Length: 234
Image (cartoon, rainbow, N blue to C red):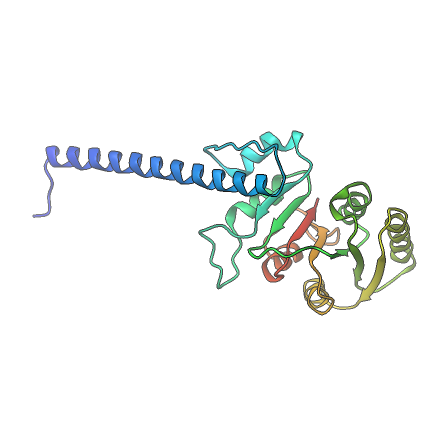
């Protein structure tokens, strides 16, 4: 008849509870193993002060608890559940970018030494913040900077580009300014490919777009399509 007695249902529920507990225990052990491997790799590269913590909850919420003591957030482009073939981003990534006040470095799968970077500059607050970061932070020092503006030029943007270039030159950067017309996501991707760029630096939201949305934005398109790390500023 397909019916189940009270005793059988109770036994099944108990088994499900035990199974869920076993899965949680395995997940915890797996997370601990991942942290231990990461700590070993970091120390092998000379980073001695490593604090490894395993938390239960939403990644974006937990990161906010550490943000006041951090200068930079580093996160992988796609998690284990993301669809690599379709270029889907990890769900944690978008939430972290939305919530973080500090710069977010989105790492790709394959590591390569960084010798240059392109800074997508639109004159907005976030792109100016990226320039100030490059000037004051040692992370990008020694790398060649391509300062890229996509769109029609005018006196205002020319003055802002000149100011950004002067700041970067004073900080010791060799700077190449590039002007391109077209759709930002297409043009930036072309520059990354043609100039053999190692790192893309850009604002998380262009000031000419809907600021509170990331899905469908230039930001998401670039993270999804370029095969290099992306350093984002809000």
